[in-house]
Length: 238
Ligand SMILES: NC(=O)c1ccc[n+]([C@@H]2O[C@H](COP(=O)([O-])OP(=O)(O)OC[C@H]3O[C@@H](n4cnc5c(N)ncnc54)[C@H](OP(=O)(O)O)[C@@H]3O)[C@@H](O)[C@H]2O)c1
Image (tube, rainbow, N blue to C red; front, side):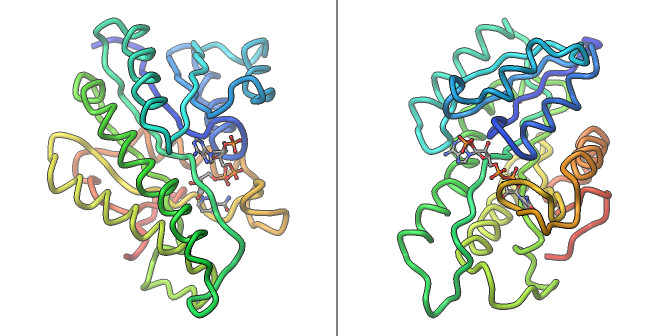
C-alpha cells in the first residue's frame, strides 16, 4: 500500500470543488485529478499550480460530466498518469441548480437538463472510472447531494427540479451500494454554502463546509455505503 492517496474531483473550477482541491493539496501525500469542463477558463484552479501552500501533486484534466467522450478521454489520461495504480477517492461534485421552481410551474427543459448533469453525469463518471476505483485502496465514491433531497427533512415546495435531481442521485447511490458491496459509495450533504450556487445568504463559508467534507470522506468505511451523511458527520434522514 502506498503512503499517498489518489483523488478525482469533478467540477473543480470553482465553489466547493475548488476549495476541496485547495485543502487536499496542502498534504504532500495527495495525488489529485481536478477535473473541469474548460481548463483554460478555470483560472483560479490553474493558479493553484503556483501556490506555496500546495505540496501534493495536482493534475488538471478536462471533463464535462454530460459528455461521454470527454469522460472516457479523462479516464484514459488519468489511467496513463497512474500507471497501474488505482483511484482511492472519486468525488462527484459537479452540479447545477436551475432557478427556484415549483411543481405547477416548472419548465421541463430545466428539469431534464438538471437531471442530466446531477444524475446522469455522476452515473456515467462512476461507471467509466470503476476499473480505476477497483484498483484503489479505499474505493470511496462520494456523491455530493443536498439536504433538499431529504423528504423527511420536509423542505417544502421550493427548488422542485433541483430536489428531484438530487433525490435521483440518492437512489443511484443506494443502487450502486447494493450492486457493488466491494465499493463504498455514499452521499454527502455539504450544508448551505456561500458559493455561486448557494448565494451570499448561505450559512457556511466554503472552507468550513469543505474542512468537514474532507474529514467525512477520509473516515468513511464500508458500513457507510449507501448512507447520506452531512459535512459534520451526522446522518441525514432520507
Ligand atoms: N452551495 C450549496 O449551498 C450546496 C448545497 C447542497 C449541495 N450542493 C452541491 O455541491 C456541489 C458543488 O456546488 P457549488 O456550490 O460548489 O456550486 P457552483 O459554485 O455553482 O460550482 C458548480 C461546479 O460544477 C461544475 N459543473 C457544472 N456543470 C458541469 C458539467 N456539465 N461538467 C463538469 N462540471 C460542471 C461547474 O463548472 P463550470 O465552472 O464550468 O460551470 C462548477 O465547477 C453541487 O453538486 C451542488 O449541487 C451545494
